[in-house]
Length: 114
Length: 112
Image 1 (cartoon, each protein chain N blue to C red):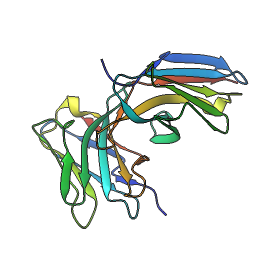
Image 2: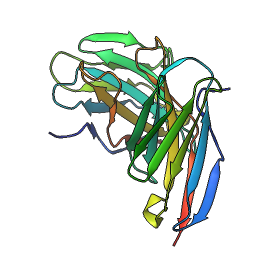
Image 3: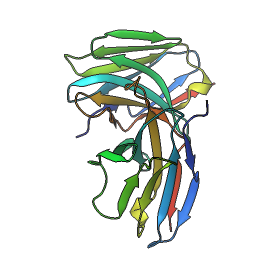
């Protein structure tokens, strides 16, 4: 059973461009969480999604950031018009319905905005 | 200030010694979890302790939880150079959709 997959692992963007980060949860997992880690910091919750629904987006900036988890395909975190402050590691984690305690983390996408 | 604050911020020990890391939090929790992160890598789940548990063991790891003091400790016994990493505590707050709140982490260096 493959773990949580994220791609790309590294992404370089210039200011003003768009960044799309993908997360494929573990097989059978219908809950996805996105977290952001700034340098030398812990992870900060951004958004929690279930298939086709955003459940909690309280940690996500109101502008330029959006997330989706379609019925088919990976979850996408989209950052429009990136700024240098968006440079960070973005992690997703997935969960299944039977075990709502354990989150399985992907390897992360490291975004660098030039 | 944030939920899940660890101390010390950095810890340097000799191989074979024990490492103790502490975490404090502010709200009611369902559980508290410890993770390890090697430099530039993802998170590895180490151990989870529920709010109705006081102590848990897993291999060389021992975690305690004191809900009256809202604190937890992680003990790594007989440390190895491979234990060098950053360690984070994360809380699953009651009624919070299982989202985790992380501390800033503790950098552990184990000298061979």
